[in-house]
Length: 328
Ligand code: NAP
Ligand code: F7E
Image (cartoon, rainbow, N blue to C red; front, side, top):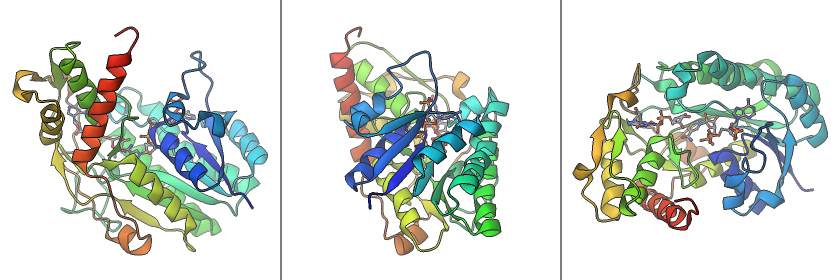
């Protein structure tokens, strides 16, 4: 029987890659799409991957339980991937209540809809390494205590624990993936990797003359979204639901990541990079480094794409976009 997957956040980076992955496994893929006055552009990532015509998009919003219940009744999914969120950490200080509602409380909306319609479905919650925040251990694993440092991270912590709670309260097959930063050519341009690769591409093509960044001493454990959506799927194929850290086990400064991008196009970073305090955060997560041992052992998952390969792929994709941009 063909398996049916429901993805919230299908129009985002991970939703697009996960759709492509699940379609490749023969799934029927459904996604929640929220109403926008910019109809026609929301599915640009799905189109970029060539899968927009192969998925079914259904109108709904995580702020609206009734829309989620109706979608759940229509789809009757075997697997539910809850990827929708206000996911930009910096914006979570500008819109803290919305972030709490969508990134946090709406996880309960998803779990309640599942409880009403399809309690036997397998559920994935997109938890985040941001929950470790002010790190309590040098390498963060499933056992490391959390210390969130932004309204986003606080909301994710709620989503994480309510997922654990429904698993323990109702026996739900509900897993939480504590994913470290993962990027791709489909990353939003507000996130630092894509801001860098897009900026480097524009500088190379003479369309920009500088790149303004905030704290370039921050360190992140960066992987590729294509690798990370595979880990999400693997979690839902296990006999028992559980929580997993998904990471590469390597951490790099923003400065060094930026250097890879500039070097790839033969430019001297120091000539273009400007430190702009406007991009500093009220509270910073200085360093993250994940320990993926459990995912490696139990899921047989490992990150396959290196930071260098990924940044080069992203720069090349941005060069191509700007070369062919009609208004560029
Ligand atoms: P993203 O590109 O920002 O995508 C977020 C998705 O959520 C978009 O499809 C967005 O729809 C949707 N969404 C936002 N508010 C919604 C609402 N009220 N109702 C329905 N949909 C809504 O994020 P991503 O990078 O793919 O990340 C996917 C998930 O993993 C997020 O939960 C994120 O917090 C989490 N995460 C990401 C990373 C990472 O490094 N990428 C790491 C750990 C965890 P629109 O297109 O309409 O805006
Ligand atoms: O920042 C520093 C910034 O916005 C990374 C989300 O997917 O991953 C992401 O959250 C670092 C921070 O990602 C700029 O201060 C310096 O230390 O790319 P980012 P993030 O905040 O780590 C986690 C795992 C998630 O769950 C989130 O959803 O880079 N930085 N200068 C900058 N960051 C940005 N955005 N822009 C700058 O100019």
